View 1 (tube, rainbow, N blue to C red):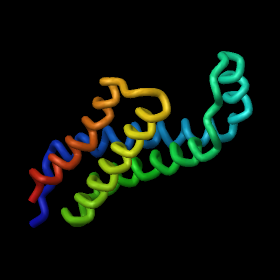
View 2: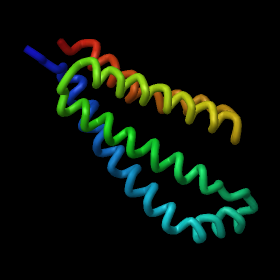
View 3: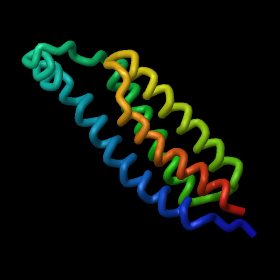
Length: 125
């Protein structure tokens, strides 16, 4: 019998909430790209490219899908694959942020939820 851990269930619900907010934020920022770009220019900063907005939306959709997969828990292997791909995306995002704006120790906190997610999959049977 498949039994998921409580950690995976709780983290998946948190990931669904955060992912849904990120999808909404990504859609709104993509739709209001001109206003956001004007704000960046007014502050004397270079505005993000369209590829950045697309990356943020794809990342948010995948995060939401990982949360839904964790709550549904059809098979341990598929949930584990979602977790590993999500960790890879977070690390890629961390590397991109470090290259574009310099490394900050606070970027490490972005790895907390994916690591807890994978640990919850590990605890599940």
